[in-house]
Image 1 (cartoon, rainbow, N blue to C red):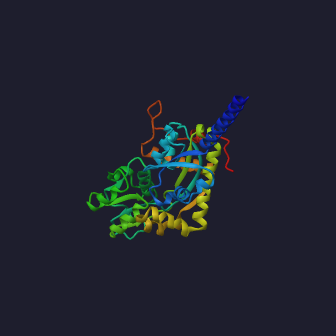
Image 2 (image 1 turned 45 degrees about the vertical axis):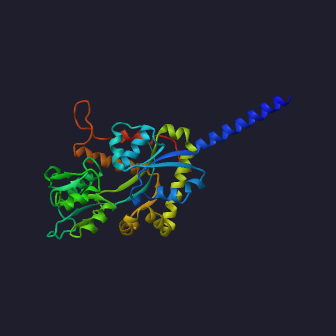
Image 3 (image 1 turned 120 degrees about the horizontal axis):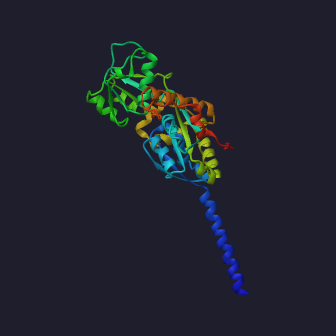
Length: 327
């Protein structure tokens, strides 16, 4: 009788432990974080202000340099959640990548700019001096093409001699070394570079490119960890609310993380919208615009006949065709 009672207690205790472990696992997420710049703020705020913990969520984050790397980490299964921009989604759509776009959380028209040493042109948006430093195949090249197309429609992209660099930080070296006369760059590097080289003219063409950051996952993660994903979105939403309602606290947290980016933050803080958006039609429009630009640059995959492919709206359905709704 005593043995039976002990077995019963053991089974009950074991069941409780298994239940607790299962519950804990269901509230754990791995985040491929691309927070190397201040305007990726919500993730940093959620971590530093213990917002994840307050929502009963355990997030293990590892840092990556780009949104493309973050997106790829989700596709490979190395992360449950990723943060990425429009361009990687546009290019990934051609391959029908196994992704779900949950929402966007940041938007701005001011985070990219053209820096040029042109002094004689008094125009607000001068034609950039050649050669121009860009990061090929990325948002940098897309921005440059849209800039020329908007302000100098008769200038072909092939007419501009371009110097390829590998990352934004390289721009300082190529400009100092006189290898490039102009550079397309994004924050905080634009502000840092203009401060170090006062002869540069900063042109923020806000009608050229809308920069958005998205939260992505896979259908499998959404199916297995739906509650955790809901808590993650809730945490990001609360982080955005903190940034909007208590900007002094938000800035203080970010300045401690990114002290060298303070001038960039102070200049453009009010031009960045931190909020969760579920406007899927607007997302599709931005992704299609990016894909069209990549097509015109000759960067899209080819079809069976060897022709460059153009992305269509139906090619994006796999990103959005699900019944997940935020709380």
